[in-house]
Image (tube, rainbow, N blue to C red; front, side):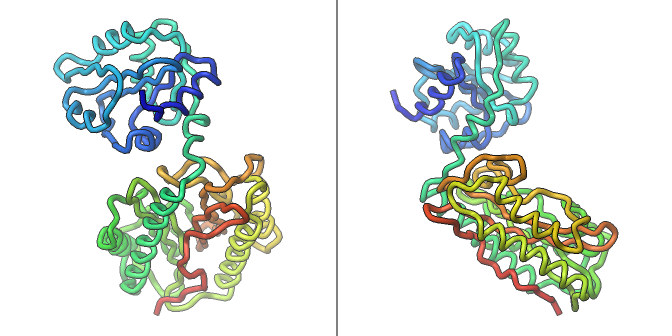
Length: 364
């Protein structure tokens, strides 16, 4: 029996449950190096604390599932007959009284199917423990992250070279998207945020087709490529034609907060410590009423994962962790500024995987 399930078996033993359940998503990909679409079709792998794993797989995915070299029994089902009988057969093969699941990934209808197949099943949300296996990136995983980040930065430069006054936010979003794929992205990490003027004050804005950028506008671009299973997440804020005195002062404040986060990051400090250092800079400025977000979040196979860089989270930083350092200030109805780097915790400090300049850029 392969030991690739050892960590998941240990989670089951530690939590006192019979098995860990995985569904398609970043934890599944980490274990099997293969992804599957979810859609309306359940696909489930059960890893018991002891013994062989078992899986429930849509029939049309069987040949792709073969690529996993799966060691246990596989129970398939077809759209025409539904998955109820397959769940019942799986339950007979692997009797369970309790199971740990990915609370942020497993869908409700899969949970209900399990509850029907295993009456009285005790379900534990083990999102923190299962996803926690991804907290520490290996050198190969860091290299994959850097690859995604570097191509994203090249795409950003391509985009900025093409931005012109009079283009709409949608025009610029299209330029950025094409640049990402031209540089080698397999997917986008998420739908990009391209926001100008007052829209840049909305942290999760959507690009507008009816707003043309004009002189003096802030232009915020938050985006990233996914390649090799890993995500980049970068934000830079630039200005069109000129930046007002207020804009320059806000930008300088956000940059100082970003640098404070870099300066404090090292093994042993907590997520609370980092957010406190960053946010304290913003709070001490004349723009404290413009704070709307925490400092950041973990980054890896998913674009948002642990550790979450926020006050009150006393999780200690350890080598191999990667997170975003993305302070921002947002004046509703006017403009916003965010500067986001992807940061690796090293053995003796930290290293920014993001290298794109943070000097204030004015596009003319």
